[in-house]
Image 1 (cartoon, rainbow, N blue to C red):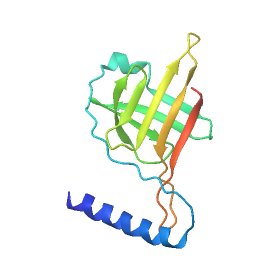
Image 2: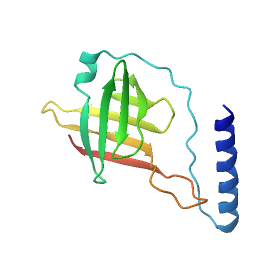
Image 3: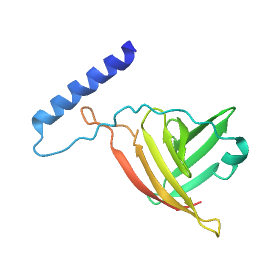
Image 4: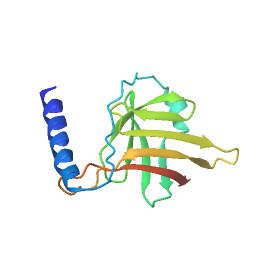
Length: 136
């Protein structure tokens, strides 16, 4: 808990320093969500698990480890996710949200919103990426 408060304070300080020198720029800060974990059986998750090509050239991976499910974009960190509806998942840490739509021909479309963890410039908050699925 102390680490979370310290990290939040550091982020606020960095954003304040950055905002002082910039004009009309907006900074998006993902807020931590209170997300309830919902169990999904291995059979139910089977249709979702695997790799999804995103329209930005990156790959979304959905995987299961024991009783938990995770999502990862390329080589970024894994986020534990939970189902919030049919084809809808959100990360417990609030850093990822997705909606997968399966067509009768087994193709997948949808939307993914995630915090890009690419190396950031000092004082600049991570970007929130809004992307569409390209294929599975």
